[in-house]
Amino acid sequence: MSATKRMDRREAIKWMLTATATVPFLQVSGVGATIARGYGQDPKLMEAYQPGDLWPLTLSPEQHQAVAALCDVIIPADDKSPSASQLKVPDFIDEWISAPYPTQQEDRKIVLDGLQWLDKESTKRFQRRFVELAEAEKKQICDAICRGPQASRAMKPGAIFFSKMRDLTAGAFYTTQEGMNDLRYVGNVALTKFDGPPAEVLAYLKLQ
Image (tube, rainbow, N blue to C red; front, side, top):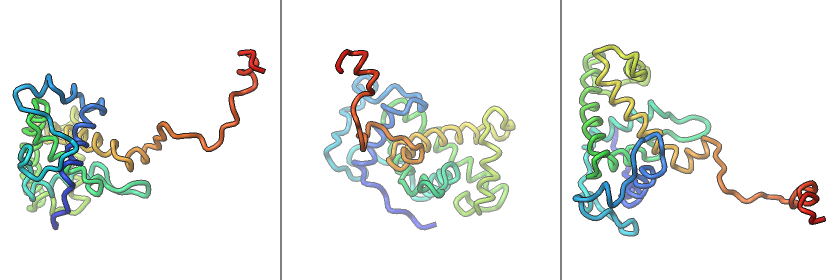
């Protein structure tokens, strides 16, 4: 699998911080002065950053490809929206687990240990790394770890990893415009036609 073009780091960092503050099921308390104390200043979002300028990115090219492959099993492309990797979700995850905050550092260990587990399980079953598997083979592994409480004892480490990856992937995907469109979220959009308040409301307010 060839390496994909990476997202601009400024955009990836802004995305990460937005998701931290707005996605409730990620169960984080936000990134700010309280959590970040001792780690230096938070990023200035109007500046551009190259790898290593703010904090070093974590994923190697091979790990990035594995994350992309798993993200696309979790949220594949369909007739309504692109896949997770097409929306640069792996870049979001790389930025997330690289940030020097307590929550992200805990997630970093889960993700890195999980990627090792994933390739080990893939090699055990199919004698190939996860990124080299056919879609049906990838799904076979994911089916064994996608239901955490029901996972076998041997699959528990993979189940913990998959749960975290599912949350991060969905959290990133559904904060993009394409993800919100997939949810059919309209938001605060002006009405195309407005004929004024209903007559019964105006009558109640004695305005007619």
